[in-house]
Length: 43
Image (cartoon, rainbow, N blue to C red; front, top):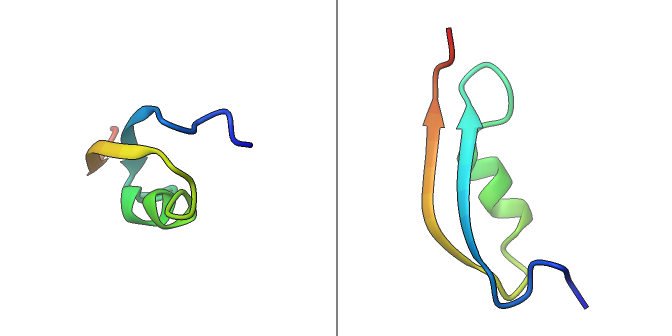
């Protein structure tokens, strides 16, 4: 059982760190819904 099961997620990745698509790929197997996913550049 996952803590994120049946939750809605907002994923914000970092351009120089871990991008959002990589985080989203890791969370693909759980029963959570990604409602927003973006990779930003924090300077």
